Image 1: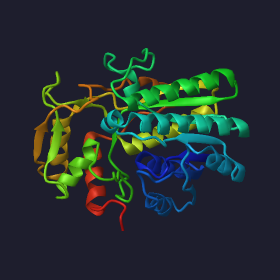
Image 2: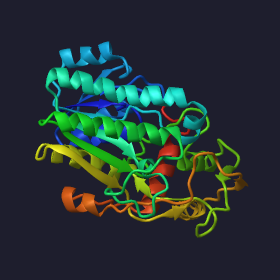
Image 3: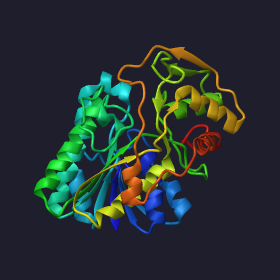
Image 4: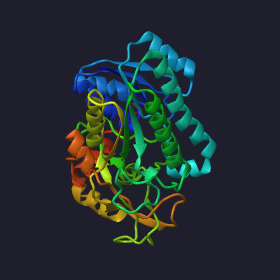
Length: 337
């Protein structure tokens, strides 16, 4: 199939492009590069020996998306093109609602005009709000604790409503947890701009000496050691889950919902210690006040994805830590060359 990957130059998008190409699909990427680099796509092409057609456009702009569909035959869409920092979404709600929701609406409108009916959506565990853990796909979605999560809920509802009136549509809502790690080659990985919002790139930047100390946001949560607990998943496992979901859409119509996680929670300090052990390094850290919008603990029940997609996270927390450090060590300035 020929797949349009919106946000395909980003962290998860670039790894998914690689897995798509290795699985025999053709890839077209639309990305405005607001939090990504085109270099990631060049490296994916080097790793796979296969081409990617790149459009440097913002998918909130309908005319730009329309041009892609007019110029290219597209069989399906994977939508990663969203802003993703929880704390930033609390500070900039209008920006987040506009970018994340309008991009989904725009893709739906253009897809409908061109008869494209397969849509894989990059959702998030944040849609569960403060439900009991582990999170299960059948749970009623509760109000989330931040605008980022609300944009994911809104997009899920939009896609569900579209599929209800478009009987040929197949939609996969992939609620995934905390991706870390990198391709084992160290050629592609997470390259945040400025101060990282996510834990692992901050850890690796401290390990490399780029930053002095890790900031741990809160140690008074009701968890094993007081620090926040998350379900960390290797980005390559996550990318493979997207491709399995896409292939599932060729078999079934309607809306399919899957958690993509390991099913196990790991605290911030447990991750730090695992990183130290895997890479024989020491990570100095400071305990800071809780961050707005964060919750104490969440992890997945990922049994549905295993049962219906034949997918299960296979890589360990040690793999995640080792591959993250391999990427950072080889690319101390990220994709800057």
